[in-house]
Amino acid sequence: MTNPDDKLNLDEIKARIRVVCICKGIKMGKICDAIQKGCDTVEKVNKACGSGNGGCGATRCRPVIAELIARGGKPLTGQQAAQHNEDDSEDDDDFFWKP
Image (cartoon, rainbow, N blue to C red; front, side, top):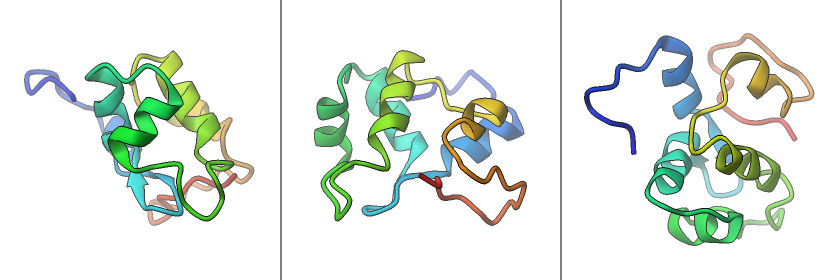
């Protein structure tokens, strides 16, 4: 959960609306909020958010969720996000992680 007093920059806003769990359509913002509320394992995040139980069995979202946990719920932006994408497109309409 972001603090209302903290202002997000454009990259952070874009990151929060990116879909991390493609199967269930769970956005990074929801996952980051769960982590900031105390979810400290991928399983706890999945239970809180509904991620990780789709058709892929969490093979796509698990690495991203683990990275977000390691970062304390801070969204992945720019190069950090690119590490989780095979094709780091600059297309603003592309809000899905590419496993």
